[in-house]
Length: 352
Image (cartoon, rainbow, N blue to C red):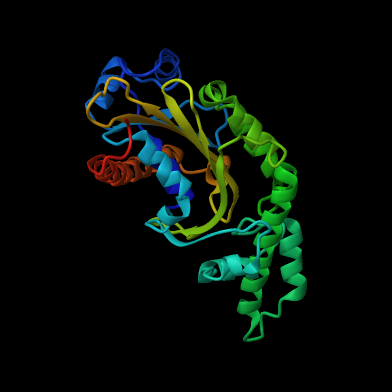
């Protein structure tokens, strides 16, 4: 399961009687959930809503679902994250070591459309997201007439990803650089920082999340489980997307909230300029003899297509299309985790 798919886990709202008051206030006041929505969630349905955003390029989705599963099962999934990240829409996946190595990308390949895009790429006019240094290096060093030209580009791309991840592991957000594929240069750290500051509910509830994501690698959270992954994802009617994500599970040992999963996009080859996904796992304290938990998810993403002029109605179609994908992913993940929870419960594991 990809980092994105995992993030999509949480897109469902919470039942009014079982959820903390601050979460209910967030869902009502900021996400537009009605009392009926909260009741529907409590009955086992998935509810998602588009959030209002200030910038035209940003899409924000919130969702909640109730799972008949133990929060401990959910935590176990994240502690072994890499074993759940090779499902649709992920067609290739791997995890980086620290420090990263080219061998971490042994199963990586560039799509033929990306090879064409790189060949035709110019600074400010490119169909794949790259920094100016990479665009200029390819132009200077690759012999496209050679039978080995495409292989050379793939190896160069792998080394670029390894160097990028290594720089991030050492220097954090300051090493994220910028995209120079469009006429406007885009600093990735700035875009991410703005998304982080907009995620109030999660950051107020678990301030360690903000410190870790904003100050990595200086910040440290005891018990946190972290990995940096690469993936190639194939969505219907879209080009394959090469992604780098820093995914972290933050355990919480006080109150009903059991933990927060954060997925921080470090790089995406297409469409996504920045993305932050936050998922909260909350015990259903009303459940006594059977397992139960709520999963609350927020995805904030900035899309390059929304920054440009588009035909009437296209932006709304893109937003609702992304919301539909979240619904589909959540339904799939709900079934998977509930199956795991039933297995764990029958084995005597999980909630005491």
